[in-house]
Amino acid sequence: MLKNTSATQDLILKYGNSNSNTGNSSVQIALLTWKINYLQKHFILHRNDHCGRKGLLKLVSRRRKLLDYIKFHQHQHYLSLIKELSLRY
Image (spheres, rainbow, N blue to C red):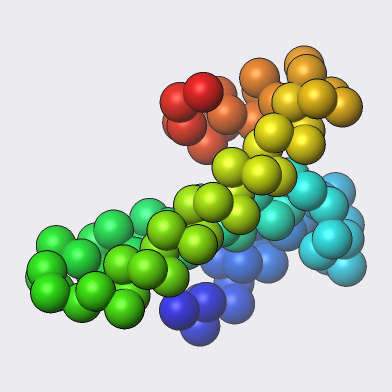
């Protein structure tokens, strides 16, 4: 799914401020959003992929937990992040 390493490196640089800062919550949220968008396109073609849909729900849940963490600790950063990633809150 994350075969495109240039896209992932761009996301890591944009949200992590360095190439090795992959543990940052913002980076993790951006990568999860990229994976979720990819899977949404996948489910347009493969409607009966129920195992994949379960994985999608896990990714959405993990992203929601990370967003809640940022919302509690850095509210202004949370607002800018959801605006950049065009997520609803």
